[in-house]
Image 1 (cartoon, rainbow, N blue to C red):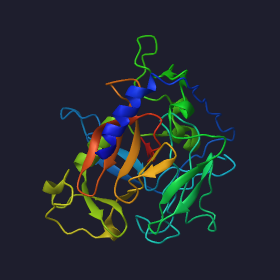
Image 2 (cartoon, one colour):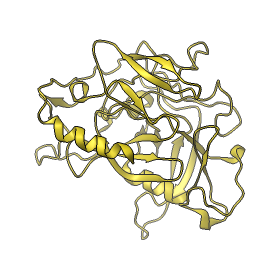
Image 3 (cartoon, helix red, strand yellow):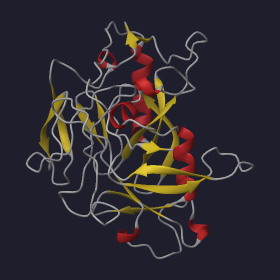
Length: 303
């Protein structure tokens, strides 16, 4: 991916910065008990063929928060169609730094539809594919180390790979999907993204600019991207992942061509990274890692 080099360069420079890192304030209102729409996918989420396969609930839309910070689930598709098919239903969601409680920006088509408004900063302009092309930050914030949660003086003090910390997955108190939705809802782990991808068929749609996810028929299509032998139609899709790009610095990169979704898993290479599921039009990756301060989307899951 073209942003991997950017992520590595930025992380290598991070130790030279003299920035103070941001600590989010958690929303105060009670969590939502259940998103309105999800699909259950049967897969080997333990990544161990010797264990029974299990079912995991995948939300049909991305996580977003209302402008006032209220924990309102804005990613619900309540229609009978399994995936959003109208402009009113297409929700990009908010862009989150890894471990952050506040979402940044949202779907620019939704301001007059009551679907989503903006949180920490607003989008300044948008292109024809409903993607923001730039961010206007409030209070000088940006997708950089200075605004990243869980760090101090450019060093991560939590989830840092140290023996004293010992955590490699976000706890529920630091998992924004758990905070917003409550119950057993949370961010997926790296292993859960990998298992879901291996159990499904993915097909890029150039018009909608994202990947549709299907139950593989025939089963030999499982894990494939674009080159299945079965017949697949959007109305039968299980999920849709928009290629909404990522927030980097004060810009949105790769909107309409690439998609980036945080897992809850800390990177094992360096404490500055966390794992993601990301994709281009032709490939889906489940073992990539990026700077924790980048702005990615979040797709909640539930046991």
